[in-house]
Image 1 (cartoon, helix red, strand yellow):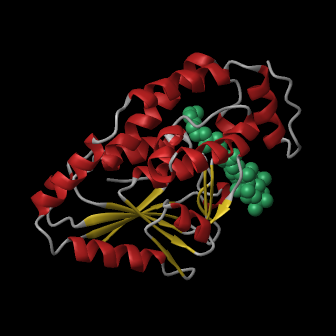
Image 2 (spheres, rainbow, N blue to C red; image 1 turned 45 degrees about the vertical axis):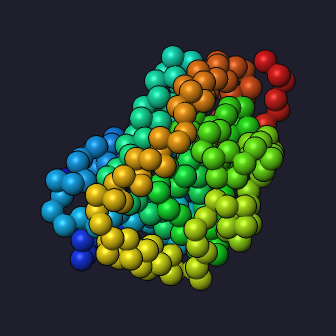
Image 3 (cartoon, rainbow, N blue to C red; image 1 turned 180 degrees about the vertical axis):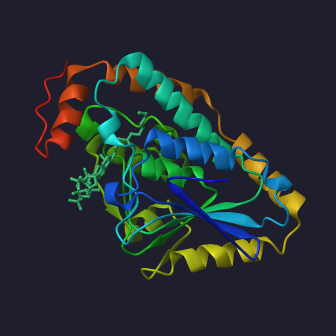
Length: 258
Ligand code: CO8
C-alpha cells in the first residue's frame, strides 16, 4: 500500500505505523483518516507473520493534536455527523483489529489524538506526552468516541472533569488515572511497545484474538451513537464557528451559548 501521510515499516513481524504530518502536529485530516481506514481495514490475519502494530506520530512534539481544525471551516451539522461517524467507524476497525495495536505516544495526544490512542489495545507514552479532550474550547464535544472511551479507562469522575474543562494532563497523571499501560523516558516508547508485542506474540494467537473480542464485547455502543448526534448538534451552533475561528486566528474564543 502507498500512503501520503502514513509511514509503515515492518520489522520482525511488527509494523510501526507513523502518522507523518509533523508541521500540523500530525492532526487527522480526511486524507490521513482515509489511509488509516485502508491500513486497519485489511484483514490482519491475512498479513503473513504479523505480530502486531505500533502506532506513533512523527516528530518530537506530537502523537496527534486532534482532528484537523483547518478542515472545520464551513462544516455544517450533516457533514459533522458524517465525519464523526466515519471517524468512529475507523477507530472501531482499530479496536477490533485481530492482532494487538499499541499506541506509542510520543507527545501531544489531544482531541482526536487522545481518542485514537484510546482505540488502541494498549498505550505506552513518553514522559513528555500530554493528554486531553479540548473540544469544549472549540465549542464542540469529542466525536471519535472520546466521551465513551475516556469513561471506560478513567471512570466517570475524572472523565467528566477532563471533558468539561478541556484540561491537558501529563503522562504520569494519565498513568495514575489508568489511561496508560506504561510511561517511558522520552524516545523509548516505541521500543517498549515492541517489547510488549514480542511478549504477546509468544502466546496463542487465537487466544489473543478472543481476548480482544471479549474485552470489546463488554462495552455497549449506544453511547457512541449518541456522541455522533450530539457532535453534529454542537457543530450546528454559533459557538462552534467562533471556537474554530478563534483557534485558527490564534485568539481566545468568545462563547455566547447559542
Ligand atoms: N488541526 C490543525 N492544525 C493544528 C492542530 C489541529 N488540531 N493542532 C496544531 N495545529 C497546527 C497549528 O495551527 C500550527 O500551525 P502553523 O505553524 O501553520 O501556525 C502548528 O500545528 C503548530 O501548532 P502550535 O503553533 O499551536 O504549537 P504550540 O506548541 O503552541 O501548541 C498545541 C501545541 C497545544 C497542541 C496547540 O497546537 C493546540 O491546542 N492544538 C489544537 C488541539 C485541539 O484543540 N485538538 C482538538 C481538535 S477537535 C477534535 O479533535 C475533535 C475530534 C472529533 C472530530 C469529529 C469530526 C469532525
